Amino acid sequence: MLKELESPAAQDWILSKGLAQPSRSALANSPIFQRPGRESELNRVVFDGSGKIGGQVLPFKFAGYDGGDWQRPFNDALLAVITGKKTVDQAISDAQNQINRLVK
Image (cartoon, rainbow, N blue to C red; front, side, top):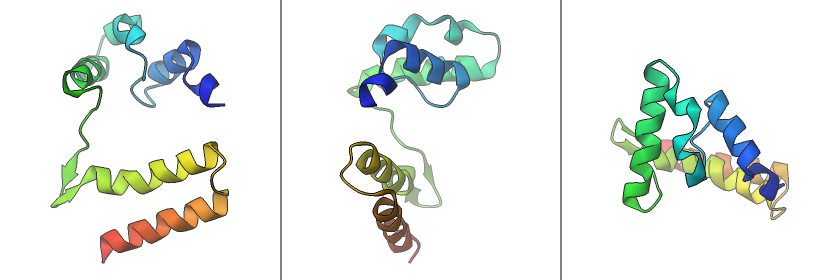
């Protein structure tokens, strides 16, 4: 499943739907970034900028919180389920516990 999600075709689809930035540098010249409109331009800027800091985009910040702190439990849960390290119920429970610690 991971190989399919990381395939050029899947990454192009993800980019075309605006779901996330692709993980393949080969898509840097994708025509999707050339579409008219602000969204395509901003996506291209983020994609281009991610290569300047080791291939990572820094998370947003709000109200004194690092956005990565809020996103990490969900990312960890998805990864654990996709790789078979946890059941869906266990991953959701662990993510909820991490979020609960953040709001206290």
